[in-house]
Length: 308
Image (tube, rainbow, N blue to C red; front, side):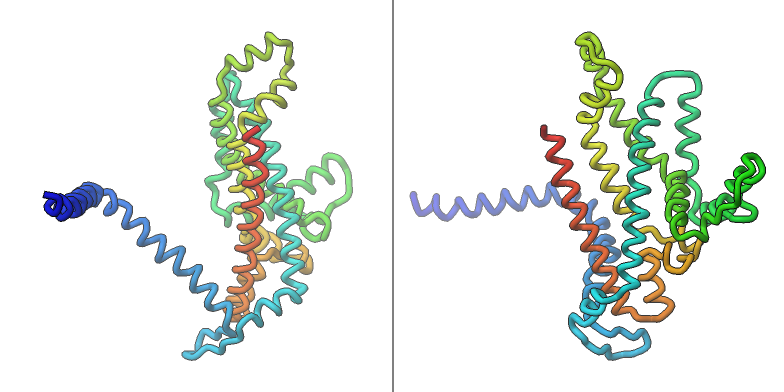
């Protein structure tokens, strides 16, 4: 009797597992294409890039020369890399800060129901559908020293001096940042608008009854309640603008000097101008590590704010 129970229980457990697996098989088949393309297009390039960074990789050679950590040692001493990384950091901080503050206040305004609010939402988001090539042409037409719209306003209307926006080392990054904010402003605005619409109106009514004014309601109610949205917007904007490439590449070509050359521009030039693929992979790995570390820190500190 006992022997029969012992021998049949594993068989029952095995058959039930097979039944569950057969039930779940369609679900696994549905997600299989995602994992296939994730492995092919994301995971494999990451592993391959790490591997190439350990070689003095020449594209035409069949056998590559292994140099270990030499590329990483050279990167720490590379002044151009640190300069381009500093330019990237300045651009990212300006662009993310302006985008978050401006899009939040505009979202608060557009949350109110008034005539034309829907049209304004569309108009604010519309620049985001432009390609970066079109943005580059618009940026040149706006900031050009001789024919730019901004200098036309300063010289013709205000009778001021012509300003070399793209030729001045102190002004080129702010000019690129403002251009990028105009282009990317719509997405964080819509994200904040969605977060604001999830806040129940009765909370504001209760705060008003308790004597809170609009500014107090915004600081002590709106900001804490949209912290998850704030975290999402901050992380996505940080990652996007740390990878800035096309705007400076098209508008300034990295000038004047190296004052608008970004880290991704330097990576691109290293790979496709000088064909140093091993060193370019090292730059890519360094940028990825920086973005991962900062993203983890953002999640840590901003998630703590959401728990309070």
